[in-house]
Length: 450
Image 1: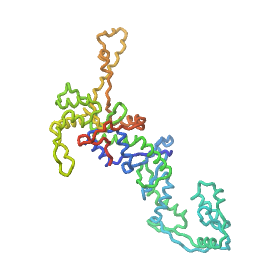
Image 2 (image 1 turned 90 degrees about the horizontal axis):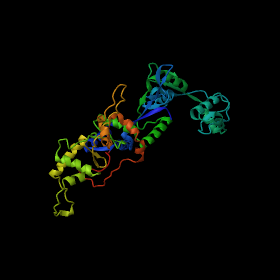
Image 3 (image 1 turned 135 degrees about the vertical axis):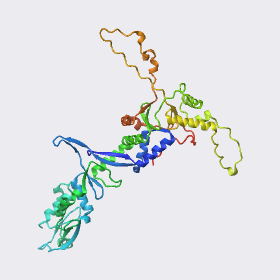
Image 4 (image 1 turned 60 degrees about the horizontal axis):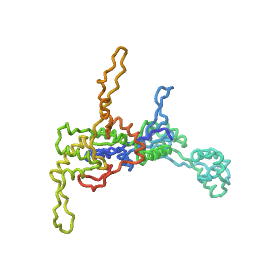
């Protein structure tokens, strides 16, 4: 694989929309599932290329292992300067030179046969013509350089048809002149070799630039080696979107979103980090205490079940509906709205986590930090008394419980994502509840990328 680094950057507008949906819903989404949404459509991310540098001990500076060059005329990317210059000259020839067809004397002598390329049909001239060998080698170098020259030469055929011979005679009865444009003084060049030399001397430095990184257009044509790198990298990223997930974590963090690891494995993004609420020692409302108690005693519960349990809806009143139309939805009661308001506060404070599946879970009490073991006494010092035993030794059960969630800083997200490879490739998190979606219990899916 070519030693060039490929970069993937989520489209900024789509990332802002995702962050806004996460903040509005309050739900916690697996970061890899959000990254997978971005990778579903090419217009949700941009592809770039960056050189890989190494230290050159001779010059005492960092140099690119594989340099990159850009043609400023059409923003195309190339792996060497000569290829970029040749492209600029062919694609934009009329910008720099004007071609004129000038008559000249036909070759002297009587010609009865000509050589013709067996693969392109191009006429090369009689084998004993003075320019034959030069034209043969030039065509081989330009079109069939990967083929052995003797093998290519064996494909050349001799044609004795009078019409073909006459066609070749007419083709060498004129020549081309090239007038340089966009220069202080007009200059006439007699061959393409002179044109290439003139372009390299006058224009190449202005339009061909070496770069450390570049983001080509979405439909830009790339060299074969970069096309292979792009295809292989995108295939890997669609299976395990580590680059997009890392870029998303940096952008989400700058927008105020937080990260945590569930069961010490899967990184989630949410409006707040899990923060344990001790309802026994904290001053909270009775509704808040009931919400915490319900979630702790009903594993896998969701918003709809919570509301119906704490504030049941009144029995529906049967009434005739004209035309058989569906009855209007029952408005929320004051008690139900109070439950939802307290739930909203708990979620945005991190005391309750609402996952992408709709499942509710409370933030667990963090385990106390283990007390460091006492240092060995120095000579002359007394051994510590048994009554001085550490709290951890006195009550080991208090240190055995582990939280179901673990907060993660934005700087540690990349390292955490790398550990998710087996789990992320095996199976993403799926909804665990199949209750009907309502305004209080939205559809159980990740936010849509825009």
